[in-house]
Length: 230
Image (tube, rainbow, N blue to C red; front, side, top):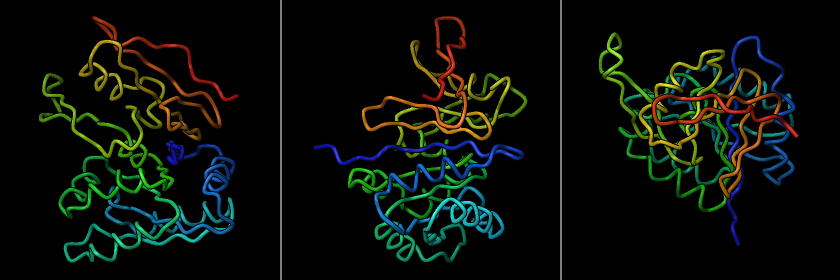
């Protein structure tokens, strides 16, 4: 029996809709009355203000406890962070800079624990850059002024998708990433205030509003029909 849980990829974004309904759905899926959530803030350098905002939003949505698995500092206690991740009911990867966040996790030698915990049945969710980190890969430029230097780099791969968050309406980075994928690949633009729910079988659902969908075709990236909430 597959014990894997859905992965929730929230967009966040300034001025977006109240995330409480989506966070409530996430909390309900944890299957516990008062779950403990491991907070991964590597993408923001473990910024305390960002942590405080995320904690307030989650507690507004329901009874839970957020525990900070801090990893960004040079002297970070990696064993403590690992123990927090292992003992929590769920893992929340927060926003900031995708590449920075992945670099921190790699430097601390902790990348492998995330897929292990997912296979054990732990629920994962992210917001903004954290959602992109939970996906398969993302795009960067060796030279920001030269589009030909675009390349993909690996992310955590918990959700078998490629996505961007609050990049509407053009989704330029998502399109650039898809141009580097094989023909037939799909990518999702998660608009501000919405969420892409990725089920264990790879199927996807939109929560809170429409999610853009794009396809890599032979010569271009084409917009497909939006994913709409049920």
